[in-house]
Length: 472
Image 1 (tube, rainbow, N blue to C red):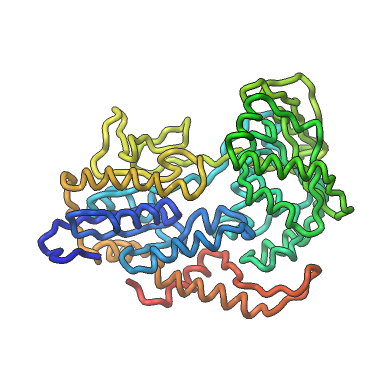
Image 2 (cartoon, rainbow, N blue to C red):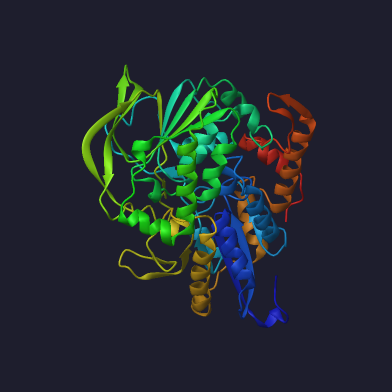
């Protein structure tokens, strides 16, 4: 990873905390940048496997997963970035450790918990955060293997892609997920689900949804699931009309929805996925401490694309509620935290102290920098901004006192950290694929299915499958 005549160049050691898309993109941009340093990059993640949100935050049947994974794999497989998995920043490593071993630290820790929805009854049994459910069906190593799926009627609050992912997984027949990497415990849980109706509720109108066309169209591909829409929810104001005329994505989605409405897709399927608009949740209803319904105030568009209440109250009988209103970042050990936005205070990626001044050598990128907005691809531009500032500062950064590449491995070893490596991930990846191959061809209601892989869930099992590889 060194440039020609690197012995004449000052070392620049960079630690990146978080091996999801934001962290990998930052590492990739840094390796390709024009620089006058002998660069080395170590990428740390709390999970034994890389890819972050791609592995643990996106539905297993998401159509874009494979393409993004291939791109991230290509970056990490070059060999100029070291990966350390199963290393928990704040427990196994602290900021003082990183200051000793690196000239600069980039935090790319993302946002992994649900944003709050402060309405009465949200704490009832049967009320869940979508992020927790996503972690379960994606085989997150730190989540309970069991998820309570007793509800016949389910509500999902939110009008973004995560809401669609959750609704699609809840309504889809488990056998139709066998072609994905779905873990065995998740398949068994979904197979036993008695669900018949999943309702997705958005606060604004059809022209203001935050889905993307591909994710919306995916809904119609679910076998034995009817999509149900309601004419009274299709309201458009001047701002809606302008958005439809000027934004091809909005136009495509509105056309898709209105076509479904006209077609009235009632095939008598055993499951139904309802899409509702102009519904503002005001209370989760309960009986005996459990969810029994969801109360909304109907909304109307105000001419600007925003909404106002009509005073009309409607109740829906449901036995489970999932809030998918956004992710929220958590505090990071050793640096400031803005609890109102769930981010590290920063200026363009330079981490700020309590007085608003940049902290030398500390940077942030991705959702922990700007909040959980935008698609995964947007993190590339975000990382470019941060890395540009890091390189502007590089010459003035205080050099690490223990910059040797083996020093950090020695520290982790002395603390008994069973860290994994890129070679370890390749071993785990091969192991998961072998599990899928061993399952053979399965006969399902949808026809024969061949499993590409079966995801390993327990952390220790992941580490055990990873550690036979020779450490870097």
